[in-house]
Amino acid sequence: MLFLLVIDSFLRYAFRGLLPSTIPRPRKAYLSRSLISHLNYGGVPEEYFLKLLMNALEDSQNILSNKRSALRVAINYGDMDDLLAARMILCGIPLDEPYLQCHLPVLAKEEKKGLKGGKLPISECFNLMGTADPTGTLKRDEVCVILDSGQISGKVLVYRHPGLHLGDIHVLTATYVKELENIVGNSKYGIFFSIKGPRSLADEMASGDFDGDMYWVSRNPELLRYFKPSEPWEGTHSAKGTCIPKPTDFSPEELERELFKQFLSIRFQPSHTAGIASDSWFSFMDRLLVLGDECAEEKECLKKKMCQLTDIYYDALDAPKTGIEVEIPNELKASKFPHFMEKTNGYTSTSILGLIYNKVDLLQTEGLPSTGVWKLACFDVEVPPDCLGKWDRLYRQYRIDMCNALKNNKSRSESNQKKQSSKCEPANEVIEKYKKELYDAPEFRLSGRNEEDIFNDALAIYHHAYEYAKQVNDAGKCRFAWKIAGQALCKLYLKKKNDEPIMCSKSILSEVLN
Image (tube, rainbow, N blue to C red; front, side, top):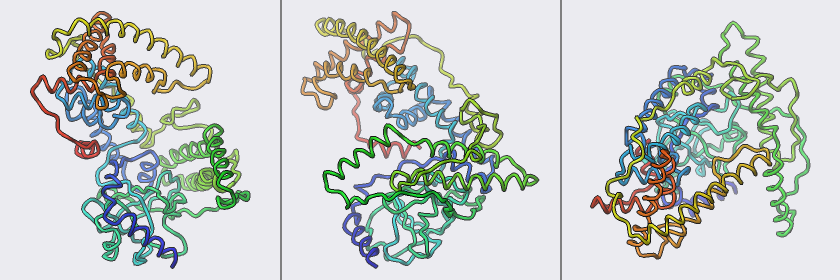
């Protein structure tokens, strides 16, 4: 009873009428390798996933010629360039602009990686935060799902990442609960689970709980039509845990030290047990998906191993909290892995995951015929000589600084025997240095400089970058102009076209495009 009162109080004061402003609309939900595996095992045909894939591939192939496709990818992967490509497209810069022509394929390549890994776009699926039903009215197999239009009704699939058990996807009934309206008010985007029964539904899904876990919820009619659930997970591990002190056992200073110690341990001495268990599980699952009914004995053997690996995997994930010592027996470790996992000891998979990987891998992003490096007509204008002289000197120094930064980053990566990060910190520092030279601030919007002076400097940067790119016949060298002065150039482009920008939310734009 106390639990219900706490939940009720929390919802009334923390969420009532405030959820829309505190929790934005959830990002578009995609499928994943684990979800595709579970759904395919549960009866969803391969043809359905391949249809989703082909639709996504068709769209990605138009990235260099279709503004909507280009903008969608630029928004989805905007964290790679601080939404630079999206800004350029939205202010009307043509897709055949030299820098966009060499940059958009980079973003398309990232999308291709996601598709190879099973990140397929799908309709009527959502990622929602889950909590317990404070009214106590939901039955064991019922949930209350609140979307933008309010509570929904009907069958839904519910899953929690990173669930590996074959029964981790549940078929539940979304039910309208009138009593919840007085608690959540106009709040949106959440799922409430029943509190009835000896064990929570959250625990049945990858040992979840109600402390902020996110759940994949689908009312996609095709998935509901085909999917048949398996028996839910019941942990059977025998791993022993150590006595872990509670936070209340520490003084504030001791607790701070202990938390920092755990952070360092997890960050720099991570356990590889969960990864090994997951990889082996995927290897066995791949085999299970292609076996026919005539291989019943082998299938049962695989499922038994997968159940054991699931227990080990969940224990390994919880080990920092529980103190459980987790080991994987050699007989549960896979000796070979499907080729889509990109490991050295691999074999060619014929499962749906292997088919998806192959289809994406064979497809090459085709660019439009190169038109060389050219300038936008509205930027090919006279620039004050003092600005040209200043940025001639700075651009020469920038090329030296960037070359040194990339060399230093490569040397550091090799000495640490780690794969070079796609985000080079020394290179980012160089970019920030020259942005500050332009704006006298980290960003255009924070600058106190006269706007016309910024525009003149931006045009000088554009001139030097594009002239050098022409000289070396490399459109990639145009990057300097847009990395340093991109925001100013976009605003100047609109000004020269006598156009005006409009306010737009990134999340709304992403919702519309996806």
